[in-house]
Image (cartoon, one colour):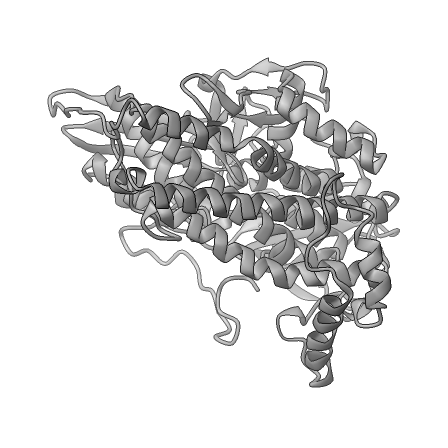
Length: 580
């Protein structure tokens, strides 16, 4: 008889997401449902506003990738008005974006996703000396591990033991310690635990790197329609040197900690079925990102691959992007292209059902209406087909296109780990791809900085002039990569103000419900076939979903301006609403 497990919330940050899985008698997932339960109203708020203010509002979509939506809001308007910003501005935007990616990726693995792999209790029994020796096995050639000296590891162990002695692990409590799919040895767990704590320091450095040219973090303020406003910083050699120093610190950490720990994970988890189960959805979509020169990009592929096939690359046709709301809490409109997108809420809630609780007992629960609407997230499609976006898509699509920088980093990783290329298309591969993207930035990102220095010697321009004709209608879009994957913003401008705005964000592509043609998105379809060791402790599901780094605040944009009651949500004030 089928059993259902409801995990709510499944996210540790940025919005509320619940995932439901239906199990057969052998605890194998036969069906899955992804449901976003909270919303925001930025797209509605933007209507009637001066388009030059759009970026400052869109960056409030998310509290993590603020710069991504800020830049998207600015560039969408620039595209509509036909503005080509100066090269200096374009390269500064790249520097800011690299700081964001460093921050996002290391925080994702260690603070948000790492505890799906790392057994904190196991680390308390590790031998710090053996762990220190172990750490040297995984760093790239020419590097030494960071924060893994025997004394440093012993101190980390002592600090966490003090938590445990009080009966409360603090930030590490409520984990599934001892779960059978946890595969790190005690020493490997201690290494990763040390890096968890070290990352708290490194994320500050990444935030400082963004603030150098962005003015502040997490909500930078130096972008403007036409370019950037940080001209005084660009004319100050000390500010440029400060960015370079922080970039190199972050790049060093990627190699000496992040890269090494993912190699360690590949070594330990390479035979764990739930981690290396092949993705059922084989379609991956990405867009070019990180401009490093007048006509050069770090990730230069705008396109997709199908059926996990790395031998064929297809270019993107943006006219084939559309969104469906058949199973989303909006009035049905069929597939709509983003320029014509609508946001009309129609909340229907959940239905009565049963779910396995944390004690393994089946209890009454509210569950999704499988035949009806069950999420605030829409279902984007490319040519009516679901696509996965994200670092894995970026790496795979660029690899298929023949990007030499990407191929070099990926091939070295596969050689060091002994993994076949097909295992990129797994939970392990998705987690590794985020690191590989960070490593490509670490190894080659200074090209943008160096080209900026050279260009500043002959050109100090940072803003392009423009006019807005209130008698003309404009439309424009931004398409690029955010830390979680391909992001696009689409706008129409009429009478000098915004008439319509739609954001199609990475977590919308991945987390959306089944569409009107019965096709599931990445979250739902890639869980099917996975076996759970213990339905009351569904770590396998959590690890899989966390590998996408869900950002549900980004994915959901609706506000009922008439004040209609759409639903009720109770938030425990002890934990807040961040999903921790």
